Image (tube, rainbow, N blue to C red; front, side, top):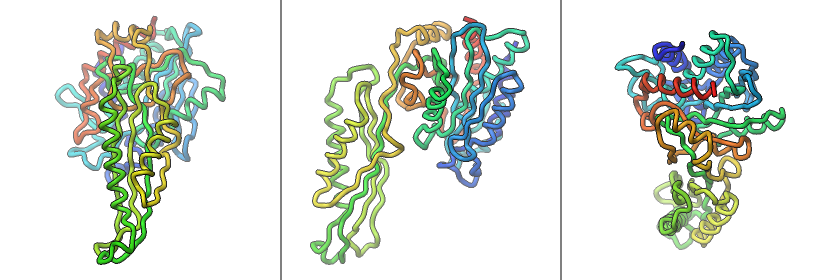
Length: 382
C-alpha cells in the first residue's frame, strides 16, 4: 500500500520539473512551460498501464489524457493543471522540492502537483494489487490554468466531444484542505483603450486627455461595485464584483496623453450571463469616457459563467463524508468554469490549503497527501 513517504518523494520529483506558465516566466523559471512535466506525466501513466494521449493545445504545450480502465462503465476524470504561477518573487529555491518539517516545499507543491502525486501513487497501488478501480479513471493534465484563459480545460472539453468520450463526474484538483468545493464565481475580462488627442500640456484645452477619461471610467466602475454591494446574493457564492487592476498611459510630462489602457475584471455570480454583463460594462465604460472615444474588448475569449454544483449531489456529499469535511465555496477560479455540461457532477477537491499557493514560500503538509490518498482509495473502490 502506498504510504505518505512514497507520495512525498514522488511529489518532490514532480516539483523539481519546472512548469511555470510561459505568461509568467522569468530568469529563474525558464520558458519551457508545461512541456517537460507533461512528458513526464505521460511516461509515468503509460508505465502504469494507462492509454495515454498527448494533445498539443499550443505548440509544445500539450494536455495529457491518461485513461485507466475500470471494472464498471462509470467514468470519472480528475483534472490536475500542470502549470504553476511565476517564481521570481520566491525567497528560496522554487524547484528544490525539499522535504522538511513534515512538508514538501517548492512551486506547485500544493497548487497543484500534490494531487498528481497522490493519484499516481493510488493508481500504482491498484496495479500492484492486480486490481482495477471501479470507475474508469481519466487522469488529465491541463495547461494554462493559472493565466491564459483556461485554454487547457477548454481544449479538453472539446476533445471529449470530438472523441465521443463521456464522463459521469469530474474532480478539478485545487488545494481545498480535502473539503469539496461546489461553487465559485466566473469572470469577464475587459481590455479598455481610451483614445484622446495629444497637445502641449500648457494648453490642455487643445487636446483631449485620455488619462482623465480613464479616471472617469475607474470612478464609474467603482460606482458599479457599490451597486453590486447592495444586491442580495442568490447563492452562497455571493455577488459579482468588478475591479480595475492595471493602467498604463502617458507619453511625457509635458504632453497631454492621447492614449490610456486599462484592464477591468468582473467576477460573475451564479446566474449571470457573461455576454449580458459584458454589454452592460461596455455601456458604462463608453458613457464614462466621453468625450474620449474608447475601445472595449473581451480578454481571453467570451468569459465564463460561474461554477455551481448542487451541494447535495452524491459526489459532493460523498467526498465530504469520506473526508470528514463540509462542502464549501471558493473565492478563486478554476478549470471547473470550462466544464459545464461535460459531466453530470463537477466538484473541486484536493489536499493542502490555497493559503499556501502563489506565495514566496510554497509547501504542502505530507499528512494532507496521506489524507487525500485515503479518500481517493475509497472513492475509486466504490
